[in-house]
Length: 322
Length: 129
Image (cartoon, rainbow over all chains, first blue to last red; front, side):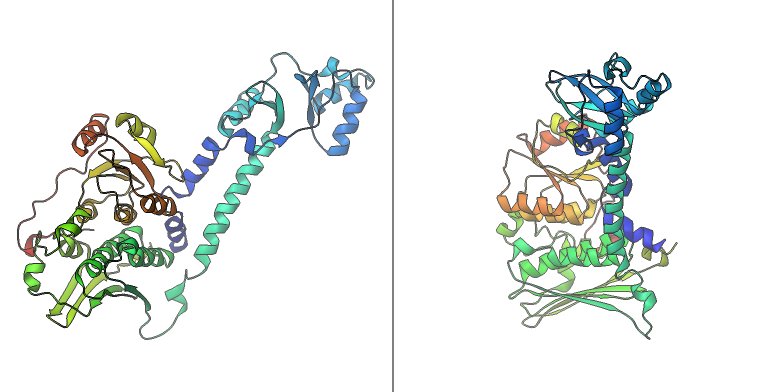
């Protein structure tokens, strides 16, 4: 189950199934069809058709007259001709021309698939907006394109999942942990959130549940923003990821928090109007952190700095073991 | 609710297309990023007048696949760039936050409902799971 969770984590919003949905719904016929297919004029003989099919190992071709599609002739038609010993007859006599079923180059693959299902035909000439023949599409083309896309998705997920997947399981020590360290610069709003986003990705990769990853990253993000807004010189974000607990520490070297209890009160903030205009400094940061974390420790001394420690319990459920 | 339905309801413009089809289950309208993070739910639309890159960052943290900017405030290039990098859709409506929210609610998009009243002092803060 761990692996599957990590795969889901990697695929993120949407997930694998919606990728397949999207593929079928959004991929246009133009992406899977054979472009500029072989064609035959109506007066070509069934013998010529046989040679063409044999040579290129195809199962049917559009019949074109004066640049206009006039029919489709297939292996089945060839069999009819063979049965009647009429290999010298023109393809015009054996081709399907009435009620010809075609695909449009811009329509989604799903529509084309549906038409294959409903009619039982094996191939459709593909027409553009001016009804000109631009390609041919078979059921096989669609299947192969979808399988290929799935294969790509799978390979991508596999490559991700294979790396630190069994990270903790493979390592033996009395106290195993993964430590991540990020420097956060003062006033660097442009990169605010980078560290937290990286922590989140790391957690998902090693198999944490999306819920746990979200709790940790939201708390880390608030702490990261605090370092950007309130410190003299920025600070450090440290993540210590252990099998049963995750500890995130945000520390800085000043100016320090004057009244820690007051700072923890919802709505209390010393942020400037400028910071507030940026959407921060509403005094909800620490409150939010306390909601997300299982325990926090906040220590500070004026002129020395602050150290905020956030602890998250990792239950087996949150690692994704069940 | 699909992105197309949201674009139609709020007469919005699509500035950054999502990497794949998204279906939004709820919305949160706020200019306070911490508030957004408190109320977060996956598959949520973030409605905000705050156009700096942190709005996109916040959406990313909150797993909100789309951000709708209001009051016709065209976001700066770095915001759009970050949204593209993170695969978050960006929409822009000329309506005010209040009206945008109203239009979306009328069109059937749900909010996040009631939340516990938060009193001064942290003994009442509730753990989120």
